[in-house]
Length: 217
Image (cartoon, rainbow, N blue to C red; front, side):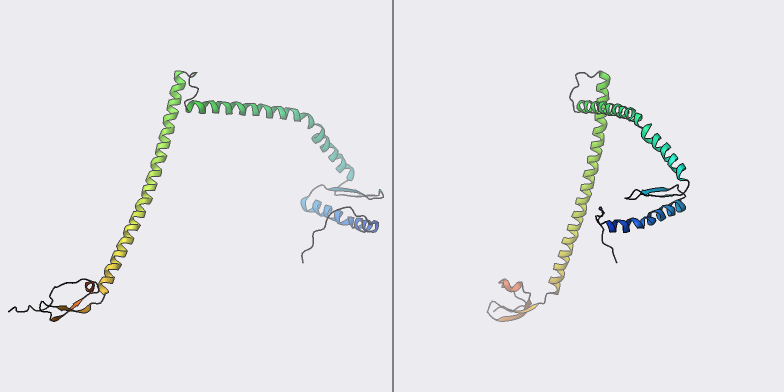
């Protein structure tokens, strides 16, 4: 069964406060378990609403408080003067980054052909080398792209040709399997003669004679 989430806020009922505070031993139990499991130096100090002191310490409370005082003085008191040098160091790093960004922007404008009036011959040669190198990279990438597209088009062409061949073979098979229909053709004298024709031939008028030749008078 899942417990509902309890809202943590001040208890107004005095009796409920006393009942809740009477369960303070659970806090001290957890502190003791933490000190045993992790071999940690743990201390807990609790003052009740009436000002009564309750405490737990895995070692002597005085030594724990003394150690805490030494640590807090070193961290909070001695550490404060170091904030200003840290900020100054950050400012120096920021100035360096701004200068680098400015140099990159100038270099970019030069590569685009802008602001070349102040460049020396050596700088112009360096810019020319960089541009040629960039052009080779771009051309190589473009050639790879075209080759890839050409390969895809060839694959599509093969698929289209295969599909056309498949349809053509299907059409030929259907024609071969199509039954022949008996037809009657008339000779020049109007006499019927036996023969066969396909469905397509029924749509075309013809005087073609099929059978033995007839002797003319």
